[in-house]
Amino acid sequence: MSGAWRSLFTYNKYAQITARAVRSSLKEEQRLAAEKRGLTMLRYQQWENGQGGPQIVLNEENAKSA
Image 1 (tube, rainbow, N blue to C red):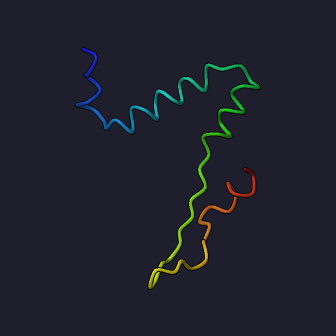
Image 2: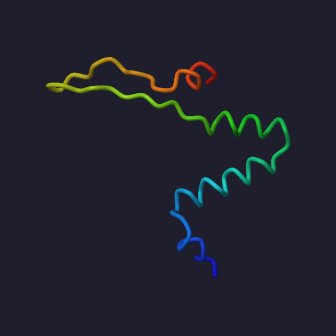
């Protein structure tokens, strides 16, 4: 029953769970490096008439630590 998880949650949630399990099984140094790679910086940009406006960072804390 390799596809049993499909009835419980989406593939994205499955991938998130497995990634967390892999990261937690690593040694401390490798785990910290993997967690840093897992952070995402969310930003957006308003476009009008083919011109992009300024980029706005939504989660400043993650942007500063990365």
